[in-house]
Image (tube, rainbow, N blue to C red; front, side):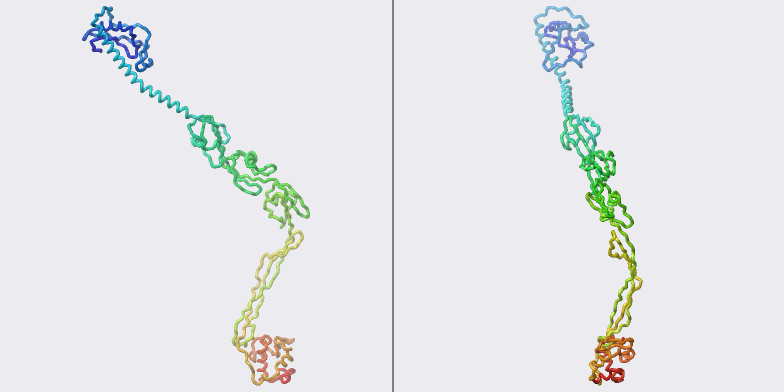
Length: 471
């Protein structure tokens, strides 16, 4: 309800503003407005097709130039225009100024209400532009698979692979290289490497390859596989876990056996297989000049050794040891064998071999002791020899010794009963204080014992040569 003493045409701020030429009817409305306290006419009805939210927005200070249209009639009748007295002109101008001020306030409020919306729209438009500028369309293929088109905000290849969950190792091949910047339209290819435990002609090593089949891997590694033996089919696929591959190339090997020489081209794994491919068979103890289980090399010559062998058992003596002990009851230089030594016996087995008809030196295979040797025990005299025997020193003992034994201290007669320089028998020798056999005693001791015998019995012990003592 408007309480103003003046009545004004009521219209929405979103409706077109009246033109200046329509001011006079407005003034007439103002003059015809009811006075203070009188009932006010109702607001003019609005156009039902008008939508205030889609109407054109005016800038600050702009004036909308609407097309000429009749002002909607109010429900109250408009009185006919009458002549306006001169004093009312000033009031009309003041009312027009007040209306313009109110209209400016309404326009300013509309601008203030619409400004935040405009800022939000501008911010969203700028963000959308940046969003579109950062988005990149790239293609990614893994291990030769079908390329996938991706939209990404990643800055480089490393970020893209991390976003897609593609794990790469130090042997994998990535193009472009990790760390390279991305641009829209780029194509990224990842080839995972696979470990291959490769054995070529006996030499083992581990290599990495991005090939998917055995044939492609050999070609990538530069392995000559024509005519070679492969432990896996050429078309076999290589998984991420890898595989073990044995390659044996074709080689020329010469085999000599039984007076013949044959050269074969083979990819055998051992010398034995190469010999068999040459048409020779190893039997019994036969072997080759190189180890039969070794790998044959290109250009190698192998000789077959035909071996026949037997065993021979021989008995060999084991020498005995001698233990010597000092005996103070015996004169120096006297040795008496207390225990006679006896050799032991050993049984030895020898291997006799003939290689290609040539007999080799017997090789000792094993041995066993049949009888242990017995140690010989000898007593050695330490008693000082007497210097003389009174009453017999002046006799010619050298002449007697030459007559009896030819002057030899170890002489023994043909019967074995008498021995030494003076041909003592064992009983007489022991009676004179000797030990052992007389022929084993030194010459000085024998002469000493002979002098003692002479003092007891004279020259009678030597009936044929005794006369020499006085000669």
